[in-house]
Amino acid sequence: MDFAKLKQLLQDKKEPSFRFKQISKSYYSGRFDSFENMTDISKDLRKFLSANLNYLSLKPIKTSVGEQTEKVLLETHDGQKIESVLMNYDEWITVCVSSQVGCPLACKFCATGKMGFKRNLTTDEIVDQIIFWNQKLFPKYVGRIVLMGMGEPFLNWDNVISAINIINSKEGLDIGVRKISISTAGVVDRIDDFANLNTQINLAVSLHSADQKKRESIMPIARQYSLEDLKKSCDLYAKKTKRQIFFEYALMSGVNDSLEDLSKIIKFIQSNHLFYLNIIPLNKVDGGMTPSNTNTFNQFIYGLEKARINFSIRKSFGQSLDAACGQLVAKN
Ligand code: SAH
Image (cartoon, rainbow, N blue to C red; front, side, top):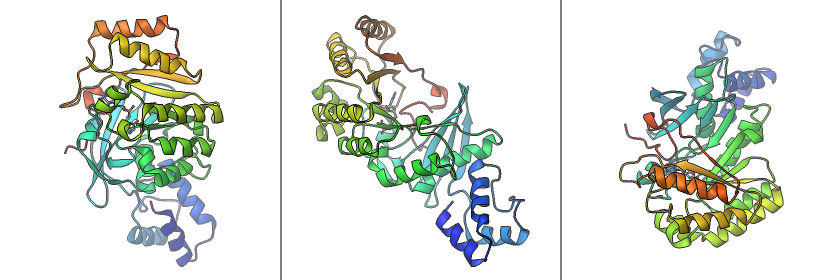
């Protein structure tokens, strides 16, 4: 919802000042799905607001339900389509949020990268993905957010940061910063800006290789920002915030799963005690890479264990729905 417009409309109607807070609180809770149903305000005001303001800025087109996972295809006012995923497998209901329509980074293994870039999402469009789920879940609600959907959040900096402020604020969704994670493919300048924000929002970096040439071959952004520069910024971030950084590494057959790759990633993670490695099984994407075979996967894990580095293997949910990491694409 466009809150600036809501404020203006309420002023035009000479409503008391508490009305704005009342409506926004109801809105964020997901208790209602339209002004018409907002039974705690007068009929007249409901009618006026419905006539002058869109409620949710996104229109759900299709939902798919899987085991502990649900995916929705949402349409924007200009007919663009994005996806958002709900994961319900531990104490907090987590939502994976998109930051752009498509993505300009074209990582070779990622479905979103293959659809190209359409545009940035607005702050409302980012927040409303969560409101959509809150409406569906009410009286339950989303407790954790990961900005790991479609797009590169650090290339839509202003809108993403404003959205996070709303998500975090007491008057907004009131989700603690430690329950918000943002993942970047390595937009180095923005990692520096992020460090300067001095926030406790979790930072994840999609690394996928600790070898410059190999990283370039799967992630074109590595040509713009070298591994060396990326590491420098991550070191600075860790020093400044004293927070861990989560490096994402999806094992791809013949690409980043050799013994040489293993020793390079071990060295990289060992170089800073705040670096943490997340091994992700590669999810299938048309025309993408092949996941490492079980033997190679296990050997790689054994090597990481032997080196005693900080790592975990992230389970992959939502594969049956094409709703797992890197599988989001607006095919409809
Ligand atoms: N642009 C951001 C966030 C979106 S992708 C980024 O790159 O971090 C979210 C995560 O999914 C990233 O870690 C990304 O590298 C990973 N990912 C992309 N395609 C994948 C695939 N096919 N299998 C597993 N993980 C993938």
